[in-house]
Length: 142
Image (cartoon, rainbow, N blue to C red; front, side, top):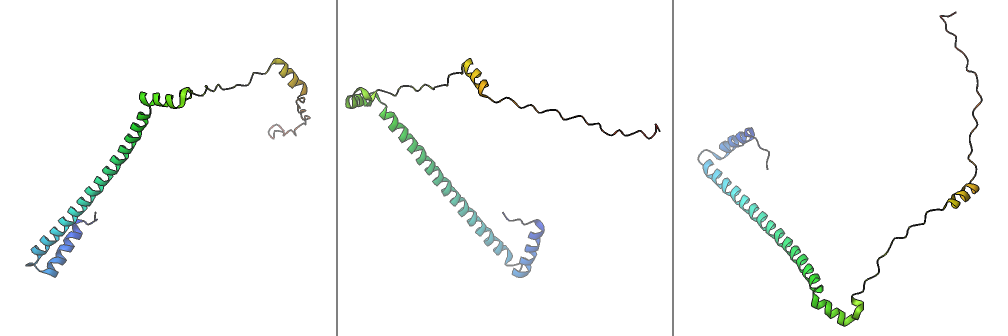
């Protein structure tokens, strides 16, 4: 909580001994200890109330989720399904037909031939003319 080392506590104790006096010091230390105890109890009580409120909020969320699930399950009960059949007829049980994915047909060999006939001819770059690089003579050979 506070970053007070032993050396700081010794300095505070010496100043308190000089300022308060040796007769009054035990009573003052007892009173400071009681204040610290009250502050700790209040902090723990606040923390306990906060944790209890969080648990109640979590329980309310869990209860709401359970109520939603039970309402959905109630809608799926057999008696409810029979009631919906009586109310809406056979349309209540009908479902949409399954969707089958459509895939494009593979191209036929004639398609490749037609594509090659219409495609431009590939351009092949001509090789650069060979140029003779200047020959560097070896200095030791001469």
